[in-house]
Image (tube, rainbow, N blue to C red; front, side, top):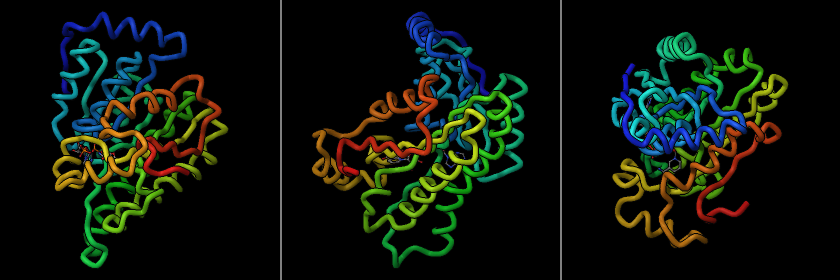
Length: 270
Ligand SMILES: NC(=O)c1ccc[n+]([C@@H]2O[C@H](COP(=O)([O-])OP(=O)(O)OC[C@H]3O[C@@H](n4cnc5c(N)ncnc54)[C@H](O)[C@@H]3O)[C@@H](O)[C@H]2O)c1
């Protein structure tokens, strides 16, 4: 686990937490892929909402810990190193979170990969690698965490998919298939767990400015091409997804389940 220490900015965060406590904050949230990009942004946002946040990643989580500490103090975030495709490691991580912090009550299945590869060049190994991380990962993490959500009689599972499920870009057949599978997972799982007060929803970002996106699909004019297809005439930023995440996780959103919410500046209209 990565310890963090209280830093300035804590008061502002606590004011937010006090406001949100009226709508039932103070849950324990597990966010996968928390070391970078969207996952890091989600950790900061959930901590600012008043939740304690467990960030899980194969990569070092110190930067996420620092960002949460900068805005909320050091007692809101704890990092756990684990590979979401390794069932034993995930079970151990979830058990550790439950024992040390309680919960988890909120699970954000965010870790994923989104390579652009022409269909003809996609090897079976690459196809399986994408499915393993983007589909097996959420399955493994959700199965490990679900008993804790059920035991609490309250839970929020949020799967990060992509606007590609509505758009079907030609160079992302494997990726689109994996995220469309996660949409199906969202719908069917919502039916399976709804009676226990657990909701399951998906959020579909468009191309969003993270370091990985800038290095890969956003390179060579990718951001300009996607922006041209949007209604909102600017590049999507990680912060553009925060209000939707908090809405889906909110205490008052118990009647919202099985849905995929598209947040892509209006590229896909469905
Ligand atoms: N950025 C975008 O444009 C965009 C658009 C739509 C959807 N998404 C989805 O959002 C999610 C996050 O995207 P991002 O741009 O922040 O990616 P990112 O590469 O910045 O972050 C992904 C994180 O997942 C971690 N990770 C990778 N494999 C892992 C494993 N086996 N176990 C645990 N952690 C692992 C990485 O270390 C990294 O910290 C992905 O699921 C992606 O498909 C991103």
